Length: 159
Image (tube, rainbow, N blue to C red; front, top):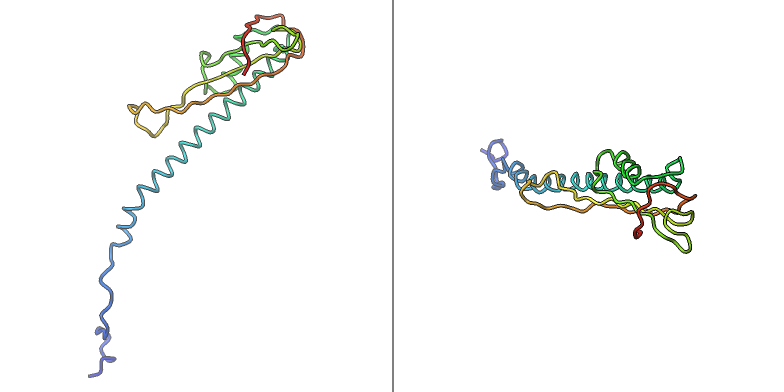
């Protein structure tokens, strides 16, 4: 009998049985892949909130620089503008508004500026609550007043 006649016989020993190898590799690689995906999602949410707050602060500073449309601005109006434009990403207590003296223009006069600042801490979504790790999110925008402001003036420093 020739060795070529028997289909079940191997003339050279083959590799060992490798069933289950792919499953084992998946068990080793999947946790690392999963953590990387969660970190990417976490960073995306943080970045989204950071950009949202920056846009809200810039919009509120512009709103205040044109005297809120009616010639008189209050701190509460500008703060509320930030909260509204940020889709709730910041609270009223996270926002500060000041009018800044520039050159010969005193705070509230045309040529001075309004500074809007919002700061808060972002708590990660995927970390356990007891860890206490937070990332700061914040933005500051300062814009020159287009005309004299007759509203409530709070003098302070700029950005």
